[in-house]
Image 1 (tube, helix red, strand yellow):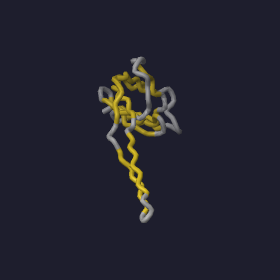
Image 2 (tube, rainbow, N blue to C red):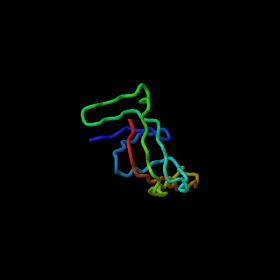
Image 3 (cartoon, one colour):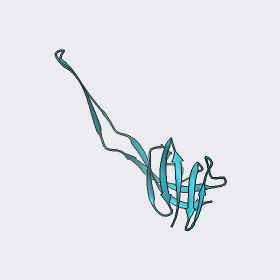
Image 4 (cartoon, helix red, strand yellow):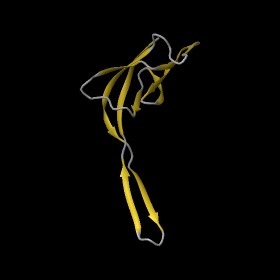
Length: 104
């Protein structure tokens, strides 16, 4: 089984060829192919390459499928005896990508 651990926008993701990932980074949908070059680890069957901190010459080729929104999060503030109540919401923006090839 061939997979790689990729760092994107400060978070780490396990990328396998042919699988889809939901990245927090915003990539424009006009670009079809993106190279993720911050590869921390690559495994190919029995061979494991660990980066120090990155694997030299390794990159993951992905194709952008579209943008999505995450689940809505509600945050409430409340202070007793002062009639203070606030509610705000937040939805994270994600980009769905498909891993095409892992180059090591």
